[in-house]
Length: 210
Image (cartoon, rainbow, N blue to C red; front, side, top):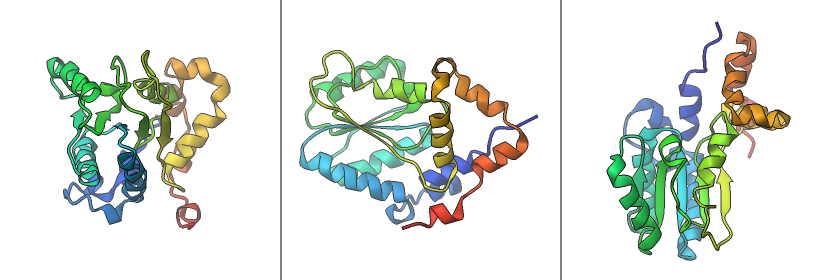
C-alpha cells in the first residue's frame, strides 16, 4: 500500500526548526522567512494588513513572533485549538482595529467561514495538496464588502516536494471537479511507490540555483 510522504519532506521546506523542534526559528535558516520579510516590509510601509496561512499549527506562533518583529507590533493567531467562542472576537478585532497589522491562521481552522476583508494581502506560507482548500482560505479576503485589490502570494521551495505539488496540481487542472471534491488527495494515495518517491525527492540542481 502506498503511504503518504513523511511530513519531514514538507516541514523542512518551512524551516529546519519545525522538524528539529529546537525553538530557534532563525531568520537566516529559512528562505521563506527572508522572502516574507521583503513582502511585509512593503505592506507595513503602506499601512496595510495581511493574512498568513500555514497548514501546520506549530508554525503559527513562530510566524506571529516573526511578523510582530517586522511590523513592530503584535497581530492575531487562530488555529484549531483556538476556542470557538473567541474566534469571532478575533475576527472583529482584525476587521475593526487599525493597529492590528496581521492575522496568522492555520489553513483548516481559518480557511472557511470567516470574513477578513480588512486584509489586502494573502500569503500561503506552505502548500496544500488540494487547491480548493487554498482557494477557500484566500476567499477570506474576497468576501462581500471587499473594496480593495487583494494580492495573493504562495511560497514554495525550489527543487523540493512543494515545487512538485505545484506542478502536479497544475497538470491536473482539467480535473477541477475532482479536485473540488478532494480528488487531489485521492490522486496522492493512488500513486505507486516509485512515483511517490520521485515526488518527495529533493532536486539538488534546482534547489541550488541562484
